[in-house]
Length: 258
Image (cartoon, rainbow, N blue to C red; front, side):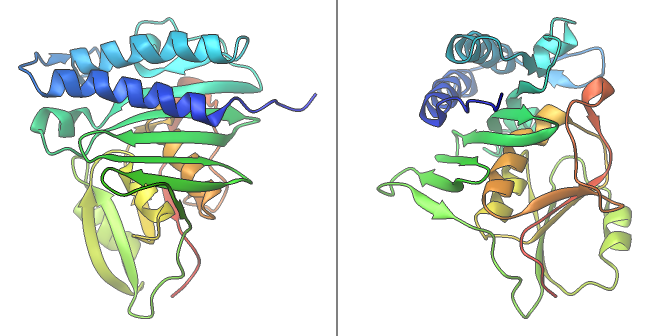
């Protein structure tokens, strides 16, 4: 039986509500704690996840949910052919640094590939969404309506490359880009990097460091819906549902070009 894709608009509403919860913490004083893996966590991560997980279970009963904080507690559902991947606050370091480059992420995975994704950037007033095979769009606060998005052809002057703001390895990145025509190198936090490719605002995102599946699944879905792709360094498609949910190094691309 083929998968009945859950209502994208319902997922958008869930992400917006979680974004409001995140901003309520962001706009006040908050405590930063350290998890067992040495990564930071705040009340925003936990409160947003506490909203998202039951909302997804109500929206699509029977589809398992894997979310970052519940996984850290050993409470993630056992996955099947389809499952949700949730990062309630990607870019916690950006959240703590108050630079606005953090996101709320919900993705639907089917047969190891992202099928649907919603990425909210509440401090920036942006929300990206897409369903593979149906297209992708962005909403920007202050701009009426939704704007369809699509990856761009690489400009003749070269690539705009986005890199992680908080997890960069400059030497590894320089080695990877050697021989490529690069017009601009920009830093950005969280899954926004994938969405910038989807919106035709950048061309390449090499990630040469550790990430987890929930960090990128929603952005990957938006990018794939907009015509881009994410693959391992040896060219294989990046898959989901791996043991431990840890990603290898990968490269996200818009359209092919110089």
